[in-house]
Image 1 (cartoon, rainbow, N blue to C red):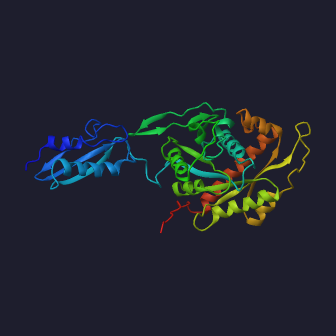
Image 2 (cartoon, helix red, strand yellow):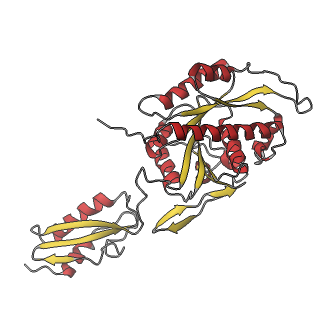
Image 3 (cartoon, rainbow, N blue to C red):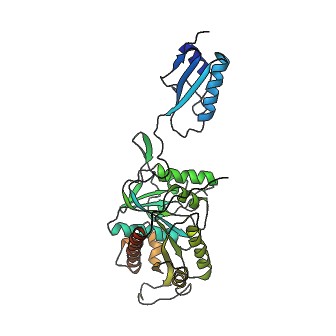
Amino acid sequence: MTLYPKLILDALATVRYPGSGKNLVEAEMIADNLRIDGMKVSFSLIFEKPTDPFMKSMLKAAEAAIHTYVSPEVEVAITTESRQAARPEVGKLLPQVKNVIGVSSGKGGVGKSTVAANLAVALAKLGYKVGLLDADIFGPSVPKMFQVEDARPVAENVGGRDVIIPVEKYGIKLLSIGFFVDPDQATLWRGGMASNALKQLIGDAKWGELDYFLIDLPPGTSDIHLTVVQTLAMTGAVVVSTPQAVALADARKGINMFTNDKVDVPILGLVENMAWFTPAELPENKYYIFGKEGAKKLSEEMNVPLLGQIPIVQSICESGDNGTPVALNEDSVTGAAFLQLATALVSQVDRRNKEKAPTQIVDVHHK
């Protein structure tokens, strides 16, 4: 039996690609490297992305079609190509980012996202290049806090692959899961979906050159925390708490999550949010509504720095709700507190980078 290209292509035309409903020939998925050597056939199948979910099934189907419609004696060798370049492998993501910092909390409701947003603004005001990734998939609040709820990030082809261009506001590059979901609908994510979405926002986005890349993590401990430490080498984590005992108990767990042997991410410090209430008309007065200096005591007990204490002032909530973070106004009590927090973080990061080796990406072995 003599093999010739049309025989092979006719066989491949019987295989439909589920993504488009077209057959492999119509969809132009057969590369022009078809080689026939006696009863040996080799060629490549072209997919849009190197992560195409139908890749394995298409390879099997193409081989089966040749054996069915040409001859079971044919030796088939199929390789794959992709039109889009692959995402860089873990360990080579964000090559131009100097410091990756997770902003975390043991429980919800302690103002973690408010701290992350204002910390980003304060660092930008100090002249640093800053990116903020809202990884709080169950309650993404960055779009509202920066008044960019209607933003829809666009993709751009860079170096042969499509990458997401972050939204820019107040000099900060922003991406949030909230840009890609309906804000009026509850977001129901299975663990794998959430992790994949997060990996895309990290690895398939054009973050460029950054001094500080802040990641607003979900409260508590979850798959998302694991995904981040398996994807990026974090410089360190900032843990946000309020002064009351229940929040501090959860903050203690949050610190332990990062410092355990498997994860080993340095704690850059604690932030005590809602440390006291100061009425706007009596700026000198402090009312300790949630207890006094609980996070300060915890920082001493766990031997981690207290980076800052942020008072409750009504303007913090109002500023967050109307999309103008309070740190934009450094003359206000809270604006000044966030600027001090940013300065303390910078010196803590410098110290950490001098004294400790870079964090290793967490390698989880499945037995």
